[in-house]
Image 1 (cartoon, each protein chain N blue to C red):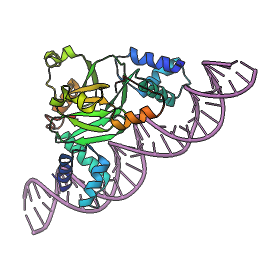
Image 2 (cartoon, each protein chain N blue to C red; image 1 turned 135 degrees about the vertical axis):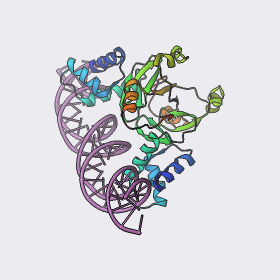
Image 3 (cartoon, each protein chain N blue to C red; image 1 turned 120 degrees about the horizontal axis):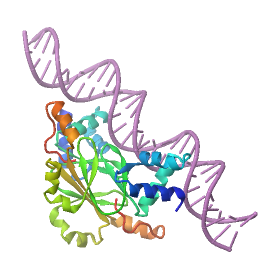
Image 4 (cartoon, rainbow over the protein chains, first blue to last red; image 1 turned 180 degrees about the vertical axis):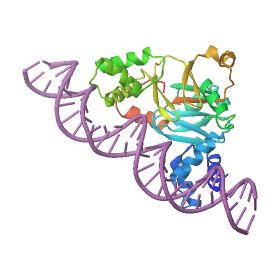
Length: 133
Length: 133
DNA sequence: CAATATATTTAGAATTATTCTAAAAAGAGG
DNA sequence: CCTCTTTTTAGAATAATTCTAAATATATTG
């Protein structure tokens, strides 16, 4: 782990804010003023491949990076704003708390398909193992 | 509904394939050879805003468009490949059927935040109402 | 510690998906 | 038909992300 990777992981874990690469870049520059954006992407992708952080695609806005600890998201269909929810919240409390009915949900189950498993076994030693998207 | 919108909706509903804008464009050109890609995006966005189709963001690949009828997705963490699942599948059958353990899941709950609701009430008459992302 | 090998960073160009703009064309309603 | 509104077109613009090649840094081995 390089100093950049370490600091980026720290930033992502500390933030409860689902940061974009750009925001992480800005935060990182306070410590390392000469770092470039590509380095941030390199590290984020490496951390993601290693299963150390999560990457969320939200329609129409840049990817967000998030700590790995299990939790789910409430996404505004208007502006893409994200907030965290835990499973306890889901039971009714959510609707009351938000005072608004859900428009729907989007559930993705993550796995490795045949081809990718074969390719991964064949290719480099291993990677990953228990990562969330 | 224009002929383009109609045909695009038809294509999206007929396909069990989570098509990208590009693929829809290609399919559409067989019927209307002069249509341009921007028209496809225009229509897909209009249909999505009207809640007639779903839009899925998958990390690292273009948005996919999908019929509205309720179902969820199995996403390969390696290559982004999508397949449909229904709730019955989820109960164990899924793991046996796929012969592979899930790496995790990604649940997004869709709603409209305060700001967007206000903006929408203030702004144009209405839109949407029951759309899924 | 030096020498080599491997991995990371940098700078900037390149790519890709998507949106925007302005003008032309197509519908819709009277 | 005529006017008004919406959609399409063509192509430029934008934004996020990845790629490339050279330079650095880090790790490994003799």
